[in-house]
Length: 117
Length: 113
Image 1 (cartoon, chains in turn yellow, orange):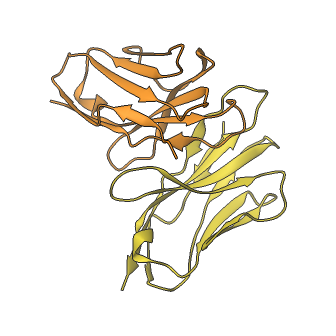
Image 2 (cartoon, rainbow over the protein chains, first blue to last red):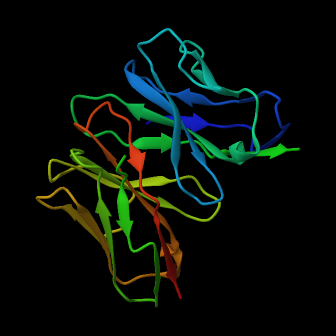
């Protein structure tokens, strides 16, 4: 079974600054995807970024980028130029890429990010 | 772009009652997942369907059942409701089942009194 660990329950960052959220995972599989989802106060689950394990290049989406270290099983999220709208709970998630069956997401416990003025 | 639709958005039930949650996936998506998120917790996988067949099952109580219909929408049926069933229930959908990003609906907030 896979496990996902987010060791930072809460973080705070000032507007326009950069913050990094940590995530580690444990799996014996070689083929998988990793995700960061954002859950603002509205409770909607919003995809932030996706990383395929077979890709060496780190994924980026505008102000969001990841540092994927496959050997270390680490998958951190960097948010640059933080904005008030980034205030949310951030979940790291693992998805096995299996043999053609639908694959569930396994989530970490989340990091609550507060962006302040 | 069209998103996942869930209904109802809010539901209040008494203990031992029955509830039905509905999910309409993004057009052309053939896979549906159900997750339960308790207060202050991360989402927990309940069950998934690919091409109208159950593909995986998580920690779903026997009191719950679900199915996916010919138009790919899905329903989660919950019977003999307990106080502990109060949670946010998410439906997510993806295309071709495997190896694809899951997009979440807005959730149904179920309160059991």
